[in-house]
Image (tube, rainbow, N blue to C red; front, side, top):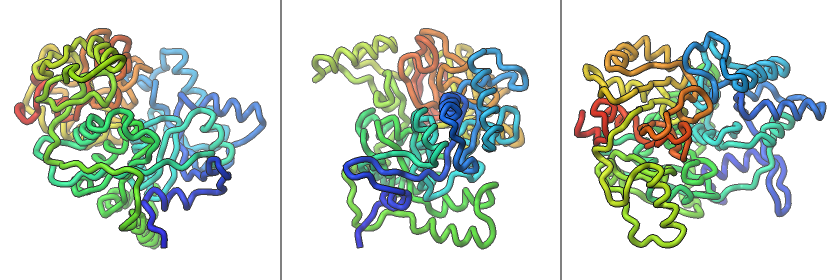
Length: 466
């Protein structure tokens, strides 16, 4: 029998039709929609006189440009308000489940899917958002799509898609104290570059990956897209099953046992071939931080910004342009750099585990006077748990501001923007020019590093602070 990877097994099971020398007609199990990329898709359906084929397979929530304060009031920004209203209208018209502002399960689309048990192993999942790769942590094929593809899935529950190449990234060994999953993925991206996995679907494996919680695995898969990958996935195991057991949309009773039996088959066969492989030692990974304007420009917090030695032509020019934007110079240490803002949130690190981590380390401490500190839960459920567990009081006592769920300062599509020229250490996923606001200077790091920076007021190694 042919040896198959996990990706092969899920992909092949969802091919409706193969087009000779072309893409596959590929069936989609779950489709997540939000207020930004869905309105035009629905409008085009209406123009064509086409309905939604399987509304029960689609789930909506507003997240990208919703405010994170006063969510019970009318949204001030006209475009944002219109987009949220259109999402409501379209979901109601087509019978699509909507987790609206103020509802018990409102939140970032890639946070509420897993916490409700909608995301499950073996599924194919799409959304008009690149960080749909998050759901791959459950052993699913999950990837972002464009507006025209959102329309295609709504109308047919299928998409035209060519099969990606396969990459295996193995991280073995034990992680050092103070090193998190965010550090793992920033380390990997720094090693292979922001384009190093272009054209591939990545499977993560190895003892260091298997030791991670589901929330930590979601962080890894979330940022697969930041090295150019089509998506990332991790084989489901007992950690996965334990996380999903009892969730609202998880199978129940006898169905649970039958489904888990199937989920256990979702793993790469021994001897299956990948197009490319990388192996990394967990012992080499330290707390990481980015210094430039793409997620591949990352170094160990205790390291120095790379020099221009060996760089030539356009590579050197673009590198120096990036450092100029950030106000940094080649060869200098990043430790000790003053910071203005810290942000804990996003579909990368806005889960309860992330907020617990920050609260645990700032308990009894105060943020530095020069720091504005925002904590934005990824969902109402996360917000509720943070209150019930006493985390909110700890964070507020330390000088952090807890805001309401949404994408917030991950991207400048709402009111939560970093002012021009200011430095922000952020748990989000992108550090492009202007990503967090025009002229904003973003450095990506783990929640633990963000907590340390908030307390000290400058870039520092969390292992030395806590």
